Length: 193
Image (cartoon, rainbow, N blue to C red; front, side, top):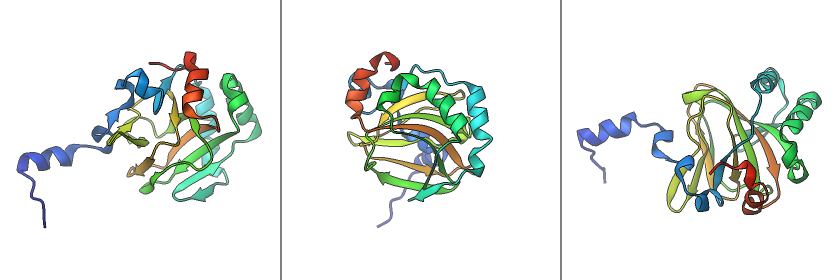
């Protein structure tokens, strides 16, 4: 059986990006944000992102299912730790995560960590493929940002990345074993809702 779309439907579907199919996490209510993901009021210096980006291509990555993970050189790790010092007692790892261009990280739940503090780094703007989170039979994503923006999110919610971009996708993540709802409650002053 083949589904036939009208000319109008084909035009609509052909022009939408994956980001446009997602509901914007920033538009959700506090109840939802306290269980799924939420923007954070943490300023991350552009100079630190620039310094990290100078080394990310030369790191030794461990690959798992499309996701490539690396630590940071000590000096950069220490600067990141200083920037996120308020969370350090609950963070067990700070990592650079990379998904190569035209690579998919299919829907999964993280096996160990419960919470991630997440900063998209490169590429900037429309070329950065958003993480997709699936809840309540809907698809949600972090909206387009042209400046460094930090989010906390629940890694036990089904999520995926479909990097159809021509660019490798880099982000910085701090991992916590604390359940997201507890993390949200403990650090509520840093969440924007």
